[in-house]
Length: 147
Image 1 (cartoon, rainbow, N blue to C red):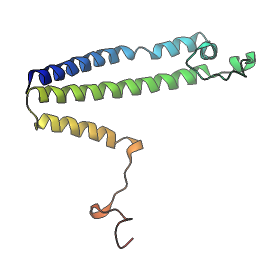
Image 2: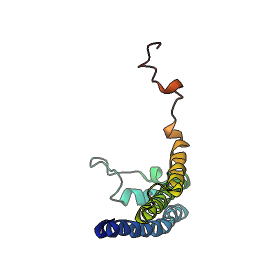
Image 3: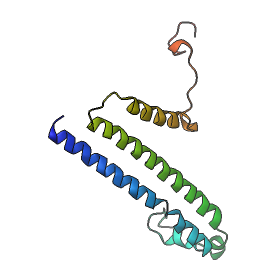
Image 4: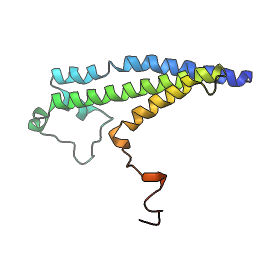
């Protein structure tokens, strides 16, 4: 392995570990939504924020609409979404750094790499968004002559 390739791999590994450390600090971001819900100013924060969609012709929002905004459900849904996203980011970065560590050690086809890939593919396969129908005999129904 050349020096430049080894340096590049080590750089990516260090950036991966840095990303994992930052990811653990990102678990604190749901506290922002919970604090806004406690102070009952979630709707006002959304209205004043530049990151949310606001149409130029509709600047006026009534006080009853702001007061009836569901602060706690919004805060909980946003918090759960952030936690799931950060958790998946950390898992992906951990798998990447482990695989790159093995490649850096010139251990290309190790059982550890295979284990990391199996763990990650299992997590993806168990996701409800990646459901795949069973196909008999590795054929596609549209391509078989009996379909």
